[in-house]
Amino acid sequence: MMISHDGGSAISGDLLLRLHASAPLPPGGVALIGAGPGDPELLTLRALRRLQQADVVLHDNLVSPAILDFVPPRTERINVGKRPGHHSWTQQAICQCLADKALSGLRVARLKGGDPFVFGRGGEEMQALLPLGISVEVVPGITTALGAAAALGFPLTHRDFAQSCVFVTGHLKDHSVRLNWPALAQPQQTVAIYMGVTGLEAIARELQAAGLAAATPAALVHRVTCPQQQVWFSTLADLPETARRHAVKPPALLVIGEVVRLAAQWPAEQHQKKEQIQRA
Image (cartoon, rainbow, N blue to C red; front, top):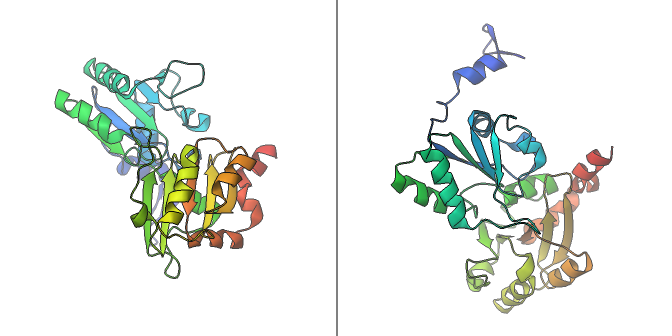
């Protein structure tokens, strides 16, 4: 590929990438990398470089196989995600493994779905590593709510429908769903709830009790931008029944707000675009 600037001499895309490349991941350093929502083409250039420079990659179970394909065969891979029938890693154990690998002089990549600083526990891992003198780099990724908006055709903000957007988790550290319901039930606002499937009954009930209309549009999104992408449109009041009827399981993102109506203008085939490509 050749790129010309203002009619000047053409230079190769590969050369441009080298010219703008950041310093490599140092031995003993840890990169907290956002893998994005799943589509490998949504990975950032820096994330790709760090994966190819790493000696060991600790990854979550939700990182798509297509993104793990970028990890060189020589690199050690450690799956620290939760898998049925397998030992689950505690957050403390993950932090300890990151520290042990880094202190032994290895270049360490911690690969997470979405963005490491948006419900990705990247802050906890950073806090565990920095006091040990370990250098930490954060490589942002496209968080799931942004991926869903782009893939399904509803903006998260819109001058007519939503002047604010709130990201919240539906699964707190103590496994409760104790959120600031009045703040989330404000009009002209989009609410994106991560990890909210198991708490749907409480979420729908409490938002309505706080004043959000029962007919407010909502969407449940599963594995957005991945070949398994699915979306179910509903209303706030009907969300629990929609999830039961379609046997919706985690991981799924919940989006609530008037902007969801705009998805109706998006070509229907786009909602299942990834599945169609997979079948083709």
